[in-house]
Length: 81
Length: 462
Image (cartoon, rainbow over all chains, first blue to last red; front, side, top):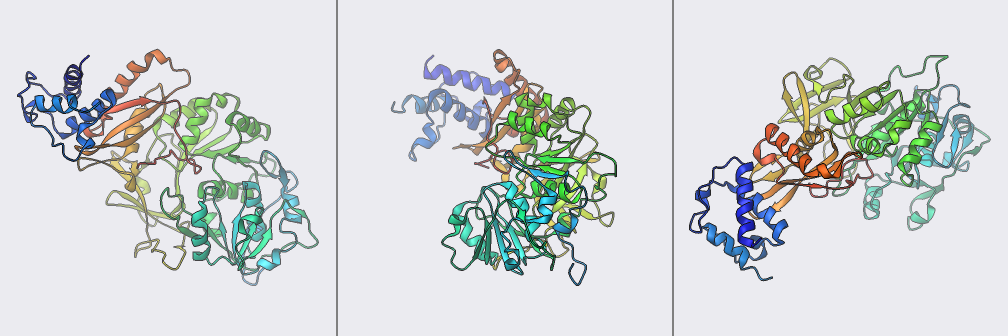
């Protein structure tokens, strides 16, 4: 499974657990519009760290937290292996 | 006997001394040998009025030293087994130690200012020691970080909860045991119950496998035993409980949740099972013997017995003659507030007519500014029938500072193929009973969880 698909799957799983009704996940959807609160994002980032072995948001002080789903996924795709 | 009526531990040994013993895996010493002998090579008098450190490699010699020195020394500081070497010097200085009683004299060869007296198993003595004063008993707190605090007790305060425990003549001698180390408050309570209450004492040993320990408890005929919920969960998990049938089972030192109480009731159907609240500072607070977790709200209040209790800002406060009288040392903080209450730092919550312990104030996990006690999450997880023990902890998060994750130990007979199902059932129960930020974001199954030398679940990151 690609990084993108794994991220989408993790988002859907957490939405179900947190009882969040997700809109269609498009690249230009803002993270705010997902309906996720900071706890849901914290869980997402932690699970992805376990799944993908990386947490791009604590890796570097220069990384700013993304605005959209597309930015969020790219943050993981662009991490040097 | 002293001018004023002062009683020391040696004056409380009671009767049937030949039949009663203090034992560990290697030795059994009868109380008649303790009473007639000397473990200080005849040099006990040299400790008169001194501030004595008791530093031993094992519990047996520590217990013998307590009986030998109480009523002679001005104060005695009982060194716990896990005291870090770097804390020893400051503790000795704060307690103004000027004598050391030890079976490890090499450890103190640098202490030129202190009198070092070697400790050994008792040998027949020409004359028996006489109580000349009320000795101050010093113990160390078991906090996991920083220098332990020195807490001052008296024998009278330490024995305050031991009332009417003397065996009825003709009845079998009670044989006490504890998973604790007697150099800690919880273990010392049991040692004193055995000695003052007319019983025998079977000591634990860190090098001994649990199955061997239980076999030894059986061989010695142990009737009364105490430990932390973590100790008991380990025993229940081991399968060794089947060969063991104590009459009296007590839990203290950690929160006794319903799951561990029910587990013990099932394992020991004939036994009286109860949990007690005690701390090194506050002493023995109360015992709960109705088989339920938490304690009745009616225990709170003043003037209804030896112990006054109240809840302020969510934490349990205790005022009691069994409490320590002070922290000891030149820079020691006050032990009690202006009204004489000790703030235990144990947080409680009123639900219906009962208070429930929710955790330690300083163990709180912060999830995006919301406070979470790991213990309240563990209590829910431990309620699953296939869970033996669990640990909730904080995992660092770039977004909320921390999130809750949990490690879970399944029961011995658990089918590994059910792990995913169990995970979902645990999470469903957590979601039903806890606020969302308290539900573990991740659950990891582990074969075992560390327990500290003090018998408590290790919480390195809390």
